[in-house]
Amino acid sequence: MAGKNKAKEAKFGAKAAPKKKPVLGEPTFEDGHPLAWRFGHVDKGGPFAWDIQPDDKFREVMSKLCEFENKNWSEITCGGSHAIPTEKPGDEARSRLVEIERDDLDELLSLRLSGPNRVWCTKSGHLLRPPWWDAEHQVYSVAKDKADRKKGV
Image 1 (cartoon, rainbow, N blue to C red):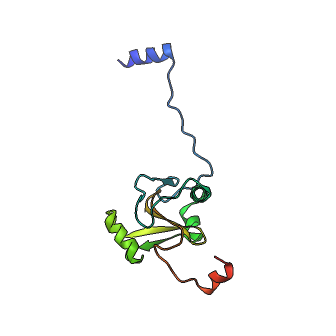
Image 2 (tube, rainbow, N blue to C red):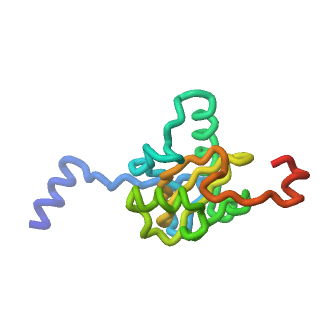
Image 3 (tube, rainbow, N blue to C red):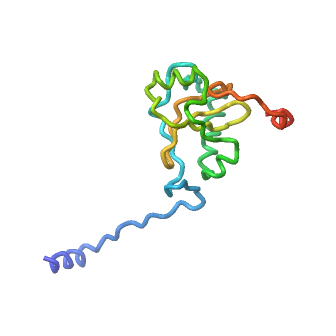
């Protein structure tokens, strides 16, 4: 049987498996893959819903999310993004987690876009799933410190 396969390969030309080229310069996460977004479970109701219209604000948010794709996890956290245990956000956010049946999470990620703008995500390896967009930093509000006031953040 092996002889027949070799004969076929000789007659029709053996097809080598295509080589996959690595994407150069693309940062990867701890699982070796580049950041990927999954928007299938965005919260479409409640106070932090993704109900922004396709306008300048929407383009700004999406542009910032695209910028995250060019960073590794260390670079993302150095920019002010960080994990928050789910018991820390305010009552409204914790109640909403119960309503959308995500109260089993241990933490949420606050991705800092600019000023008070945040996108809240869950992280599994290189996959980020953003349930909320928080334009006014209300999911987990913190008092600004003096250094922030000087920066005008």
